[in-house]
Every structure is written in structure tokens, then in C-alpha cells.
Length: 303
Image 1 (tube, rainbow, N blue to C red):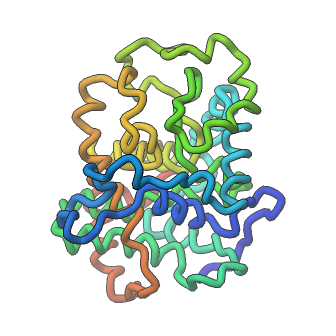
Image 2: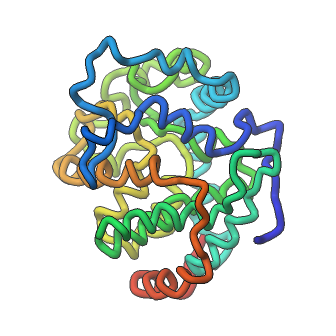
């Protein structure tokens, strides 16, 4: 494994980045086996309203603090600044497998729950897609989808790397987790940003909507010239839970967004529910993934 690079503790309300995903699995639980289909897992649509818990109230203090920071600092101006800072893709040139090994530097030595590397987590997601007979481009999408977390290695705090994403520049949905924390966001005091459409036009399409900054947008920009449109939607919006799980912000979507939604929803269970403690055999799997990568990507990409 690459040299360990611990997270900046002053910017780390979570004990580990995966603690956010643990919270999501509680908020959006996998259905009982008899309710799930092989390639369609997620919240049981027949679940009665009274069966839902108040997941925000049950969240760990570290998760609540993470969302407090995220909702306070993810402003429209912040998102514009981060796009300018990172989307020139001028930091490094790396191949996809090299980038996965580079991400292995992201280690939290205080995490007692798993000794899996970032690369092994990526392989777990991709291998579940492969086992289910998903298309080759979708398997590859699963392998690359979290590579944007390398933003942590470049000094970004957790709240600017992971977390449920949401539009900036328009009113906040009350379906966004911990919506009460937006009271501390300066944009909440800007009338221009607090109407239903805000600075956008109805039906403008998500491509024209600025989403809170994080690893989704970053990896999408790195990969946007190489993967099919369906895979790019998975990369760009897999953390946009208010849209693909809560059915919010549909008024900003266009026909393409509505057609692509099913692909984001199909990918989501592989993102959340495929991680385990069983280590994949990296040496054995590497030739398959290097061939798959070469089928879609050049030898080096700009990051």
C-alpha cells in the first residue's frame, strides 16, 4: 500500500469517510431479501409511513457535525471557487489504475472496523456489478466512481468531498438530510437563491444546475470524455440523494435527466450495499481491470 496519509483532524468530524455511507445505509435501508430483486435493491416502496424512524435524530454526533459543516459552507460562491480551483485538471497525470493506487494513501489509522484499502473497496463494488452480469462500462464505472475522494489528499475537508449533494442557487428541499442546518448558510439569506427555481429556469436540465462540491463532480469531469452517458450520470449524481431517492428537484430536470434517472437508481445499491470485510484478490483481478480500463481510457488522464 502507498504511504499513509491521515485526514486533517481539524476538518474531520467523521471518524472515517465511510461513516457517512454507514449513515446512508441506515437512512435508506436495503429491503428484506424476499422484497428485493437481484438487480434492484433499496428502500421498500410499500413500507408504511409509521415504520420509518427519525434517522437524523438517531445519527451519531460526528455525523451531525459533518452535516452541520457541509450545509453551512457549501454555498453557491464556494462551489464556483472549487470548480475554478480543481476543474482545470492540472494537478497530476495518471492512469486509472495508478489513480486507484494513489488513492490508497487515504488511510485513517484510527478506524478499527476494516483494514481494506481504498483500491479493495473499489474492486468490491466493481466485482458485484460484474457478478450480476452488468455491462462492461458499468463495471468500470463502479471501479472509478469514488476516485474523486483523492480531493482529501489535496487538502479538501471531508464536508467538501463526501456527503449527500444538493443544488446551490435555489431553495433547499426539506427532504435534504438535516435541512435545519442550512440556517447558517449565507445563501439562505439571499432572496435570489431562495425561490423554487432560484437562478435557474424550470426544465433547464441538471447539467446547467450547480450541485454542491464533492467527489462526484470531480470524477465526472475527469471521465466525461470516455464513458457512456449512463455511466457519467452515475458518476456525477450518485450522491444526489434528494433527486434519485427523494424525488426532489424534478422541476429542474429535462427529458435526458428523466431518462437517465433509472441508471443512477440502478447503480446506487452497488455503491451502498456491496462493501464487506472480505478482501478481493488484487493481484488476481488486476489483469482484467487493466484490460477493461484500456478499452475506455487513455494511458494517462489529467487530474
